[in-house]
Length: 235
Image (cartoon, rainbow, N blue to C red; front, side):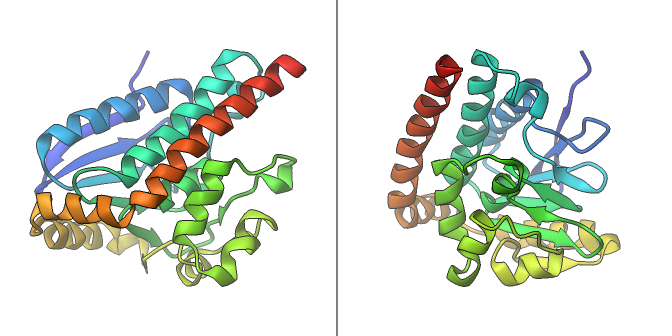
């Protein structure tokens, strides 16, 4: 089976790319390879750049697996939120380069980066769970609560508002929006800036600042997993 994730070290950063040839949906294979890539990246001691191929970071979970029932769907949900948790607690800066759309779990991965760069254009950034009949998981709610401006929090999670890249910048989803042609240069500039940090100081400060958040997220992952598995047995 062809790999869905690329890994390399270039320009002072670990470069992790998501590429399924479409919208980089988070399938079991994609998530397993992303976890493996972050395992490798942690040993490098360098900033990490996570980027999606084409015009999307990710359109979210593979719905065929998520709605298919059985343990695979529960494992998928848990693996996705565990990826967000490890990004939020990663020992070096994580730069997310979002070249377009970020939907559902794709949005939560964007929100889990330390520095989040998007591009202008006709792109959608949204937590669309409520719009498609799903209650937002606790873990996603806490990630959104941490990142979003209060004025945009419930608009995002309860009203499933669809943001343009510029609207996402205003909401607190993105830190910067640039022209698509400037994304590579902007990411490289960000890597140079965060790469000059003292990494142990960065890690200690990040964990100190996010201590309560991470504790809440770990509990939320367990609760979401228990709820989802219980719902499977009730069907």
